[in-house]
Image (cartoon, rainbow, N blue to C red):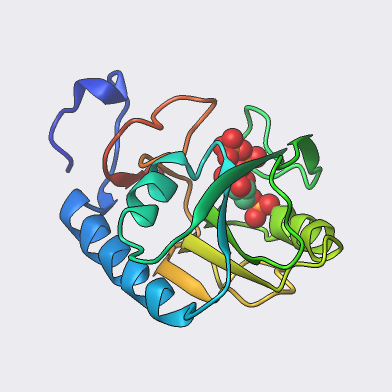
Length: 181
Ligand code: PRP
């Protein structure tokens, strides 16, 4: 049982899936992997908002090579806890993508539908390379057609919140990742 956390607004939470220390250690490893993987060329780290905002901010500080940061906004969930399958583009990156290494940073791959749509859109902008970094991957469930080059953790098929991930826009600020089931 998780100790009472006032940030959870009295909500019952079964267990912490990934605590702060484990997340920090894995993000540091990912930063090192990404640094090694991109020896030359311009790197644009593209965060998919809103869910990736905390992960992205921690991750880029662990990448020890020049890079740029921009964001993309899509929406696939409303207030429900299951994906609608509809992906809506709300904000397009301002930065030119052509000729750059693009690393698309996602908090979680759930059904994979968001990334299937976004990867096709971004590939059409002629980047030098296009890869995915996802903190959490529900591998057993998703329909993702593209490889996730950098994965933080495999994620059980549960509804998870914290470290950027929300339920109806709540709980993004919880510094660890918990299951609401
Ligand atoms: C969530 C999550 C991923 C996407 C994954 O975003 O952050 O981006 O859904 O779902 P999928 O693999 O089933 O497509 P959401 O649309 O809830 O927006 P948010 O990032 O603002 O929370």
